[in-house]
Image (cartoon, rainbow, N blue to C red):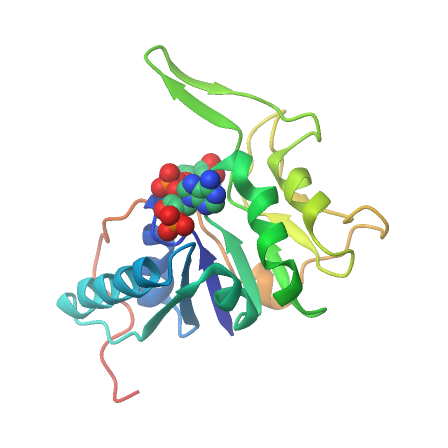
Length: 189
Ligand SMILES: NC(=O)c1ccc[n+]([C@@H]2O[C@H](COP(=O)([O-])OP(=O)(O)OC[C@H]3O[C@@H](n4cnc5c(N)ncnc54)[C@H](OP(=O)(O)O)[C@@H]3O)[C@@H](O)[C@H]2O)c1
């Protein structure tokens, strides 16, 4: 399966890329608004994995091209830009694609973290509002009484059970540092 991390140049994108690269055999595509930034990020993640004995091939493209190449599209962008980001790649999404949004409406200031619920109900619902009706949008995160684990009906359809492929994806809380031993060792891919 091919997974595109839109905004994969950022913190959670890096954490997810390193974990998917280390723990799965999926193809990882880094997306960015700037193709050069995407390529540089993909190279640096590959180098970090290589340092740890993991042979993973990552590629980098502008977000729309990354989405075009993917089966699963992860919105690793700031929460209130998920809808714009979905809009910008909508023409590249196919009927069998799945969008995953790890974004939450959390903001941080000097007093700490605050949750801002969007009018749509959740950031995932914002993303679903921008996605084509045929593309399911899901969130693997769970926050009590706020951004619950959510598989969107994308406005017109009843909630769809996530496919086996999407159920295999778990982000947890992605930090960029890889802990523990790599589980996927170098092979001659
Ligand atoms: N569920 C969890 O456990 C968890 C944990 C942490 C974060 N998150 C969520 O993950 C998301 C990303 O967090 P992050 O800390 O990785 O964010 P970030 O580093 O601030 O941004 C990620 C990327 O988004 C792109 N971006 C920035 N501004 C944008 C805009 N206006 N429009 C489109 N793309 C833009 C940038 O990529 P380019 O410049 O390369 O395009 C940037 O590298 C957030 O929504 C956050 O809520 C979830």
